[in-house]
Length: 406
Image (cartoon, rainbow, N blue to C red; front, side):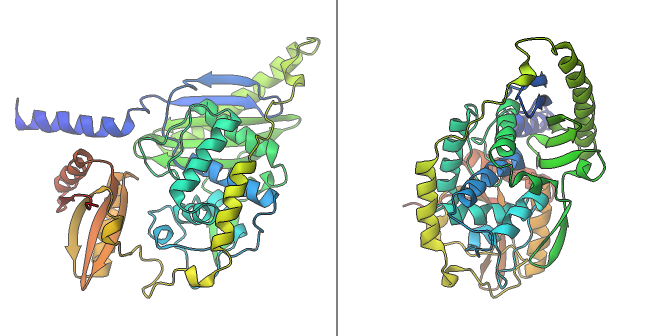
């Protein structure tokens, strides 16, 4: 076989390994009041949820607010890990306070990865601990095919869900927290003095649109969950795995248009039906979360208020730079060059972040006067080698870094 043929097979395998769960587009439309599913396509297929994950981060945050564990104006602890998250992010200014209200709005409107980690680390000892609470909550809601591994939705091959489970989560947010649900309609918000526009484009032009959440992963495409009210009809629509933002928005508008026509016809035909499905209420009772709330309360009490724990970097806060200790190197990594200029390293890091599309975590590690660009959180040597080969193909230097031994 020729060298080109071998390379072709390798890259086919490389990209397939990222998108094994996303070989086709998934969709679902449901009536919010009854939970009745109007249409569904590939709704049981496993997908990577991407930033739709943040809906569960919000669900647990709303649960904590609802029980009085946290308050809207509380100031949040900010870690180095949160600062180092790849975009989408708000580049948290650690010299200014970040409130719970601002954090919630940053998740809803900007889909900020750095803020997702902030909320996770305030409501649990670590983001990993928070992801365990997320998964427990998901299963208690009936999301049996869902596993969460982080608070933001950044790529992790073990973080999975499907359209039905994501619809359950959307319905739970709408039905369990009606007092907070109007926040998803927000078109613009101000966080730490900066104004951000909502990523859910159709909220700006589609009649009756009430927003909810968008998501993107190179491994799985563009996702959106949208809710919309017209007259007495309230629908939730999911379009997952689309090829572009334009295709995603066009798809969900088509689903909503068709859904409103369908529900009008079905309600009319079932008017005299004693078992009218639209007369029933969605059976989405709040699950028992006492143990989870207790864990969140304990973690929050340990970290708040404690201003000394807030990370105040000496460098400009918008630069994603942090120094990792040897003990933190528990995963395989790929180093993509070392640079004497911080801004050159930053540019390279952003280029790599775009190239990998959310796979791994791209960070800058300062060492004396050198700034090393590395891709973290690679689960094994094979993945690290694959990343290096992809970077080298794009004229970027790279070598594999093994985990530290205990």
